[in-house]
Length: 93
Image (cartoon, rainbow, N blue to C red; front, top):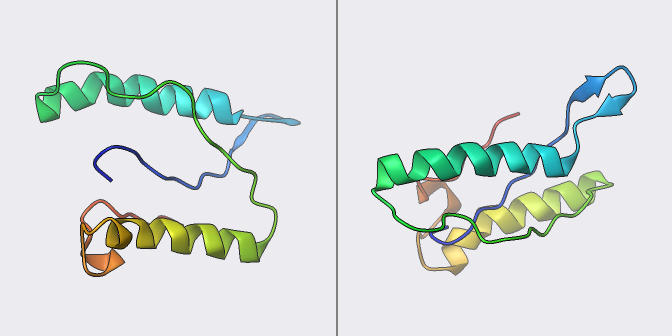
């Protein structure tokens, strides 16, 4: 999407009984990309909005519904005819 992203992430184990927090993961993503995007896109100014919207996915059905929403987002926005045609849709298992 030109003005936002969607992602589904599964935090990895940080220590034996502790996982990386969503906040620390997103901070890393935003920090790195806010330095790289201006280099590649010749973008000036703020890259990311403040804040975030995150949800905990608890069931396979919720995961499927969220993934389908993400896949259809560029289609609904008129950026592609199918999700597969959208060049910035990646699926990693």
